[in-house]
Picture 1: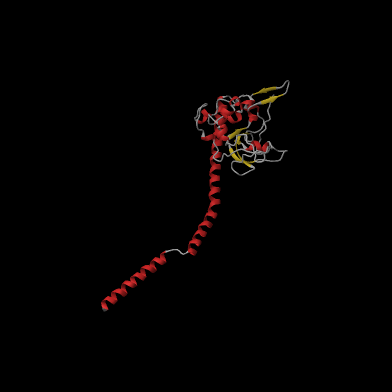
Picture 2: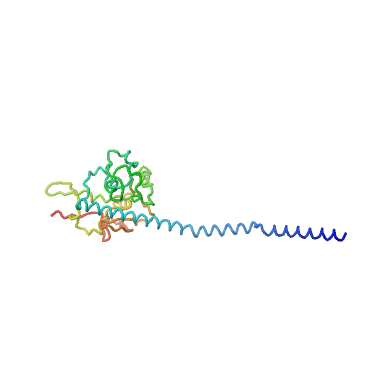
Length: 264
C-alpha cells in the first residue's frame, strides 16, 4: 500500500511538472502584443533606410548609364568628324538616338519615329530591332503624366517602354537655325559651340525638359526634384539642381540647354 501511494504521488508530481513546463513555454497575449509592437517599430525604423538605399543605388546606376551614353556620343562624334546627326524635327530623334526597338512608339507614332538607333553600335547593340538596351533604361523610370489634366505624352507608359529610351537628348544639338542672310537649318558640329563643353547638356532624365520649359508634366523619376541626372558634352554625368527661375531656365553657370554658335 505504501509503495502504491508513493508511486501515485510520484506520477502526479511528474504530471504537474510537465503541465508547468508546458505553461511556461507558451506566450501570453501581452507578450505576443509586445513582440508585434517591437517588430512594427523596427520595420518603421528600417523601411525609410531601405527605401533611401534603393533610391541611391538606382541613382548610381542611372549616372553610370549616362556616363556610358556620353562615352558613346564621344566615339560617334570622332567617327563623324565632330558633326551631330542632321535629322528632321518631326523624327523625334531626341528620343530615338539610342535604346530598344521595337517600342510602343514604333507602332503608335510610326510616321514620326526615326528608324535607326544610331548610338546603339557604340554600346555594342544594333541600330534596329534591339529588344533590350539597359544602358538607355533608368532604373527609376516612371510614368510621365499630368495629374491635373489627367494626360500623359507616353499614354501612361514609362519612357523606356514607350520610346525605348529613358534619357531625352538636348535637341538644341540636333538642329542649328540661322537667319542671315536668309533663314537656314543646318547641322551642329562641335567647333561651332561657344559654350564650354562641360556646361552643355547632352541628355538626361526627361524631367529636365518639363522643368526648363515650365510645363505641368512630371517625370521626376528619382523623386528628388528639382534635381535631375544629366550627362554633359564633355562626357561627365552629374546630379544637377535645375533652376525654376524663368530668367535662368536653360542656362546657368552649372549647365546650359541652349547653345551659342560661332557662325564666322
